[in-house]
Image (tube, rainbow, N blue to C red):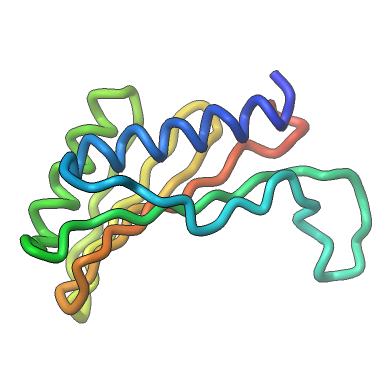
Amino acid sequence: MTLTEARNFLRSELLAVAALVVPDQTPTVTQDLGPVNQGALSEDRGPESVCTITVETGDPTTPDPEAQIGFAAETLDARGWKVEITPVESGLHHLTANRDGYDLTVDASSTDWRLTFTGQTPLADDV
């Protein structure tokens, strides 16, 4: 699998899960940098090595971050992701998940109706 194929898989997986968790809304890709070099900011120039994508969704009429994080965890688990929900801290609800070298997080806040999915592909050497 190429890094571009890994990116495409991650993007479609994030959009699919977001659409299942909040079915009456259309998820939006808010960040998709494409393949980038992880060391670019530290002057370590090299080949493109990773892709990071962020998708947002939510329903402003029924914000329930605890339920949304719980349903996101169930949905990801059913799709083969290993999921861990962290304790709520300062109103921030958070989970992490991984599968086949892909990593993602889902975040929601008690003070906002948005649900944010952020995922990263495996490193290019591991794809």
